[in-house]
Image 1: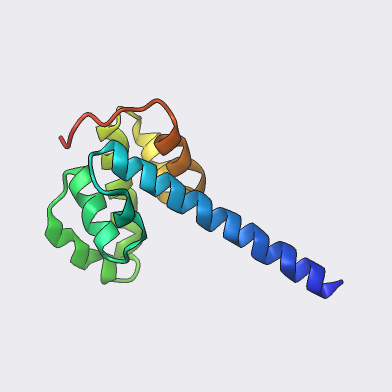
Image 2: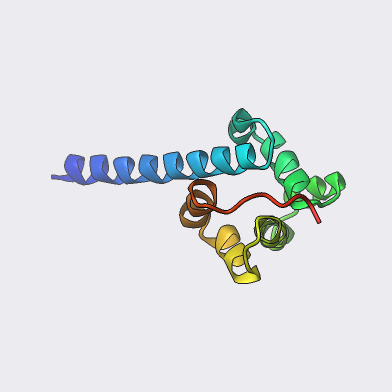
Length: 115
């Protein structure tokens, strides 16, 4: 019984990981960036900063505990705005990315350029 529960838990985790990667990939492609960048650590943050229109030195802030959470939400808000979405959608991207990135990537939102 424990093995079945463990297997279900791992399957659920894998499904969330696949949803996040697929959502990121589609968002990157919509913004004219290479989709494979979504799976390269640190480089995906750099590309996300470019999509958000934020300075590249902000990547340093992602290595500071607590500050990284705030920065992630601010970058996600900027990404949402650049796709014509609201600030609240951006907060959703930052806090519930496994739900909101696939919505943004597979939805009808179009990248309007970094502002």
